[in-house]
Length: 222
Picture 1 (cartoon, rainbow, N blue to C red):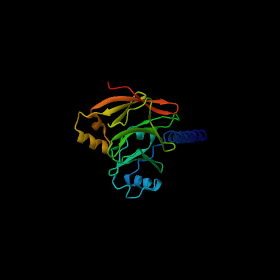
Picture 2 (picture 1 turned 90 degrees about the vertical axis):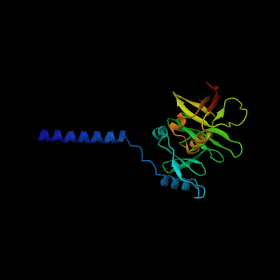
Picture 3 (picture 1 turned 90 degrees about the horizontal axis):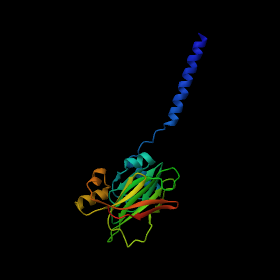
């Protein structure tokens, strides 16, 4: 009888240990922040006053960004500035002044540290509309430009959509053969998948990862 009790006790201990190990191996991702909590972090960490955050914050986090990085993206409906927020930290992605702000974001490990970064396109410019691509190291919350491998003739006056295809990031121009008003509204709020599917996209180039960063290489339209 004593031997049976000992065996049963050992089984319980082993089961408990197994549950503890399983719990350690499958740590759940923290719950998403509410818009109110994100606003508090942005105002606190970036010294943004209520006048700077004049509009409502919208959670525009793409599913793959959340799954791969655990970070959330929030866009101000008034200024069109976009903020990345996680772990009580916040940073600004690009700028939205005079344009649509951030129009496309994909997760991608640019610096090869094993942690996901953000690669994104945004447009701005009062008078001259221009689109730019950058990437952010989420470990340091620092922004870096995506440079061109060849000299460019001037500003990109068209908007951009980025898409991951295999292990590459393809750059697409948003064409003019569509309802511009609807497209502009989608870009300003941040386009959903259904918005992108309805857009006239023209392949423009590819982003190439090199040791010191990320570069744009023109490939021309298909």
